[in-house]
Length: 390
Image 1: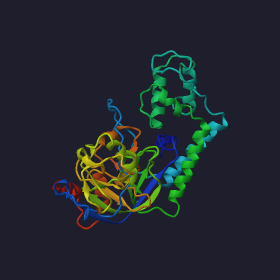
Image 2: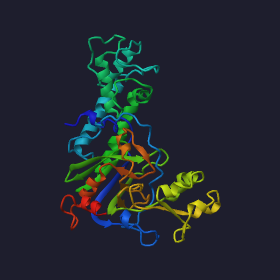
Image 3: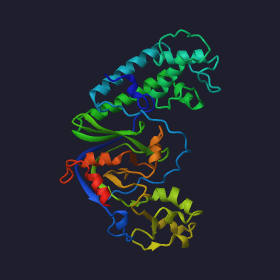
Image 4: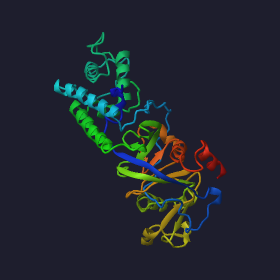
């Protein structure tokens, strides 16, 4: 039985944007390792020619004490299944009853509320959480204005269901979710149901990867059971990860990153106007066009109109924006899944930091799962062997 809790940061937060990758014939290509990287432009297109969509990393948010994440379901039920459709249908029925009975009250915004506080808004908050099922129907101190431990537990449950850090406190950032009306929740569930139903129509592939962008996670499915679940980093606002259905074509180890024109224009060139040394620090080369010679970044006038014709490429290595492996899938947007050197960002609950591509936590496990039926890649540990050999 799948409970309503399984819709924590997906069904109760936003409509889905989904990337579905059907595994078919997967080629495995090994590019030049950092030690073997060459400077020439020619001959460095490794594997399937899919470039673009990624890079332009934002600086990570300020450091704070990490808290363990519990956002990955442990069961083997995939999203594309009758079980999940039935669970969504049950959730819709439940929320329809709430709407028919008048919904829940909105909690007035104000100072933070936490355990031990006395606040006239506490009874309203308690009623709000009782109606949504995050608290028992009525507690011993239902009308009390004291924020007690029972209410704290209810707040944590609400936060966990909605993909919010479970602090047990009502802070400013919580109100946007807390004060979404029951009708708005119901509408989201209905949208999710229709999207999920559309994904299951026409049959479900025997083996596939599904990336659920609003949930910041993916699942690798084989014979209708989830084999792997991974946290992912997706496109930030304005660089959103698109909705795509594609076939995985290649695994590319030690990839070069050919900087997309959009990233170069919006992110890289503006930075180079004040930090021309940034290219050498990040092992990024600049060329006069696709087939032109390599240029010295320290001699370039980055305010010149000629800069619009320059092309950029980052060498393989620890600083490479794609990490050590890229999972190519042919699509009109030029997006793909890949490793990343910025692994600390996987510790964030909200992970929209990329320029459109999907960065995968523990991506080498996924790469091994993808390639395990390819000749020579059947034995576990083959990916690690390739990485160790460099």
